[in-house]
Length: 135
Image (cartoon, rainbow, N blue to C red):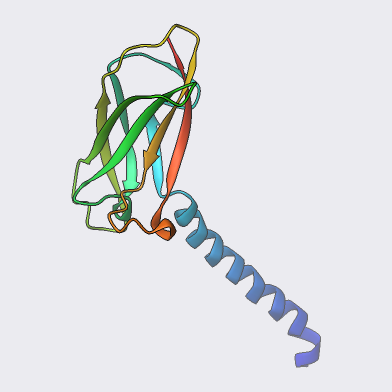
């Protein structure tokens, strides 16, 4: 009788493993959620950056944000500040305000949110890049 049902049992086990691994990996792939600005948004100064990041993205309740112009020149660099208890694996809201000299209208840039990495170890580096347009 087991021989008859083992393919179905195997299918159920594989399905459970996929569901569990997808749940775990989705939280690994998405350690940060940016509410504003959205990709390809037109931005100006001052720029308010908001969202949520998992607690391990922070160190001492902050992480760095950098705004680059299309040539890669740093226009602004500030720490995002946690708006709640950051010593958790859950999402914690953050805010940051960047003030910068506005490049010519229509140029593009990149907003980079970096996981704070006080160890300096490359294995602990992580970042996301959001393309932006200047008003």
